[in-house]
Length: 587
Image 1 (spheres, rainbow, N blue to C red):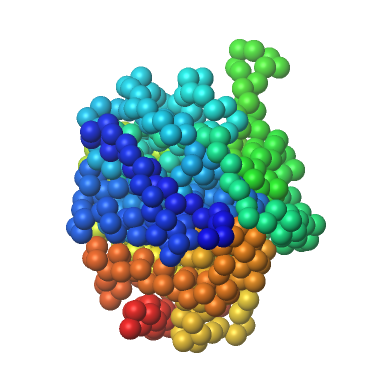
Image 2: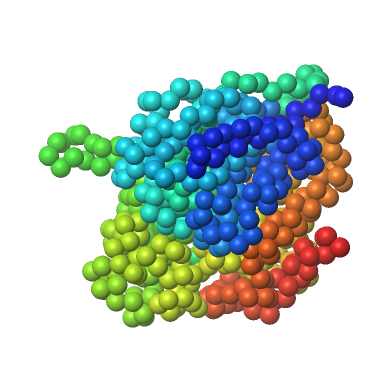
């Protein structure tokens, strides 16, 4: 049998019994390649129907793919779990060194089951697994500090990954994230809270295995071809130079930049939080995930003078990108650049998802304006647009949850608005808080229908931007979004960064797999993507997702987009057609 670079080993870790074992699941990787495809199957196997997301029975699955460690930008890890935020499919992707470390340790996937009765962290070093006492790390103010301390005590410097939670995860905030290395995150849908429910403070992974390819010349030729596309063409240039915040001014000009809880699609302070402004005045470094030549991670150097020490400064590195610039900037009316960076840093230290946090704070501000909540509910605070200092205090209270209001806000904007009112302007879709694109109907249909309720599922914003002046029909929207999301299942199974989606075309993907010893035609890959999407939906339906009950916030129909005001009829029709397409896959 010809050699193939397909992974096959799955490491199972039982936190309750402090046991681990390895199984050969070559069957899953042969059928689904890896990443999202394999993780979805493991989730169905390990997560009983109706499991409480905070139950020990809710598994955490990390998976990588056959191109990991071989090709550039195949540098992400998929995490899959049952989401405490939406109550159904939880899926989040992160880079850093996580993917390289898992594959180098010899695994295609890691399954974490059970729950510890005391804070621990798990260290995986190749074939060895250690259960370490994490009591000293539990309650630390900053997730950044936790990473620094673990770095001092674990081997594998330079090749290991340290995935950990902050206090938000410990306190079960339902949109808590998991930080990997220093500036990458499994941000969405509450993986950090699932870690916290298991008393799992961190997962450390390192290894020294190598991945062999069957035909080294073919591999080198394909590698060079893809690498040149990444570094010598314009396909990825914008991600390196200004980064994704380049979208701020573009979307603002289109009137598609959500502002002040989407009361508007245009922000008069956009210039101050734009990618151009941040690059000119604050950019200090660019860093990259392992095995990525692009270096899209932009770090601002925030200098704050010591009051009693002239010419001495505290310098804080703050990672920024478009989504958190929207959520913690325009969405809150913040145009003070330094104040914006301080809020971003606070959210990072506590280990919160920036998008969900920003949407929750924006809803609370409007709910206070409308007198749905009181100053007493807010623990004495009075939020107003642009007031970053109050938002920093509120962020801390979301984590510490001193009263019923903040306990509700820690459960997400849907839960808070259900209890206090204001659902019409509570911007969540399928229970997940809104991404930063109010570009037209396709963006919102994508949020509603995407398996993760994310802008990354089907990129509806991209379809909107291409069709300004010629709004597509509901049929066209459903067709295009389905086709895009189905193909992204292949990229998610490899696991390729979506920034490289125009490099990893179906043809190039098939070619790269062949160089790794995995023969899949373009037609086979396309069919696999459709199959994985349908199987993800199967899990969603099993756990209670019902598209007929999807709430659509009225606010999105009130605020004009680049396509004018969105028709509710168009959105609901496109959602219906999309779901029919998914259901028809299995027939």
